[in-house]
Image 1 (spheres, one colour):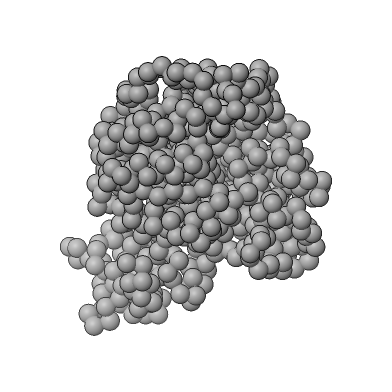
Image 2 (tube, rainbow, N blue to C red):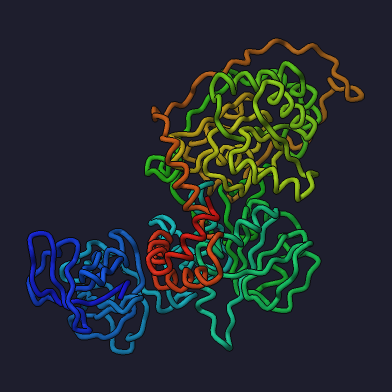
Length: 608
């Protein structure tokens, strides 16, 4: 007799309540539920002691809902004054009806699904008060209803806007959302809604497209862990499973594969790459599909806009606003005082500094030692990423760290996949502190406990700059703030990262002065000038004034991120069933531990 149960209150003691179950059995609760005698109440029973007939229970609505959340309800009956609603678990509620409201329903609307924000929970009466002004009619949506479990309010707002654009006939939409604010979770929730909308004679197939294996696996794990959905992978080295209606594809592999089952939704991750020819083909191959592109930075170095591909841009709050609201970590930003003088001697390629020229200046013993020294002075003992110019530069920077007694590793595009996975795994687990790379972790790398990012490669790319800093802005219980070590003055080149960017300007396109240029100072790859001495010291230009976090909290955060992967198949199945009716991740875990203690304990021991 665990889980949701209905009782009748029979009497109270000073600290307890005697209740009668529908089966006629009586129990004392371990805490008092202060409602009148003979009142029916709905409780969530967490524990039952059969010997002394006591139960440990909480109000059921507190497990089903949270104030401020938006949830879906089915219209079960309608009168001229009242609309009765049924929640996902059968709980009943009402909202007023009539000409004074924006939703005058008629009898034919019975069965329609609507979304309503929850304003207040009244446990005593087992009732919810709704924010009527937040009403959303989902009856004519692309999917029959939304499931907003575990989505934040800004994610729900963005999702509703996306569906609204599609309903208006704008079939290709680009969503901008800063790194670390939950783009993957948002679009995976939409995949779930398309999946649920599928009928036997109308399968809603979804194709998700990414350009790196790390992104593909991150999407797969989010669909599995958070939404209980299985996806096939279209990529060299992976076995195809074409019958699965959800497919995640590498864009490089997809261009050479024919899909026998046409998707109704195509989602492009890191969609600022969508101007590449391999992506353009997607619109030609799937002209009837709805398209969603997601990116933190709708920006191209070339100045090209995105309006030829996407018919609408949806933006979310600024980095500063997300930080103020607690959804992104505050940043302590250290930077050089002046723009590097040598950059005036560096050629251009594709609108950015030529890597070969940069390497001539920056891959020196002096420059590498400066990187290590600033880390020791400003981020000693912190875990993070160093963004280097070239593979050669990255390897030498890694050696400089190791020579200083700081455990470090290096990864580049040529690192064999198995070695790459092993290095990333050890980094995530904290086996070493510093990971040097060349653009490998500029996008989609999800390691929230990264405490610092060191910028050792100058760039004119606003996208590259923001994406790299974004690796440090994710919140984590073990850090109070992130640290940026800008050794090359990228904030002087691009502007401070938390500026309120006009993304519509970049979305529509802008003029670029110089894309490519050779520097006459270079002859046969040899340096022909003497580099002036520059001030390599960093100064604090942004200080959040936040104290260090308690490192003891790190275990709890890691537990929440990856514990799901240690559940056996039976528990994973139960997880999906319970999650599907509206429980959050945390609530599902509580229920599993309560109902299946032995299996849960086994998973917990494997995780630890």
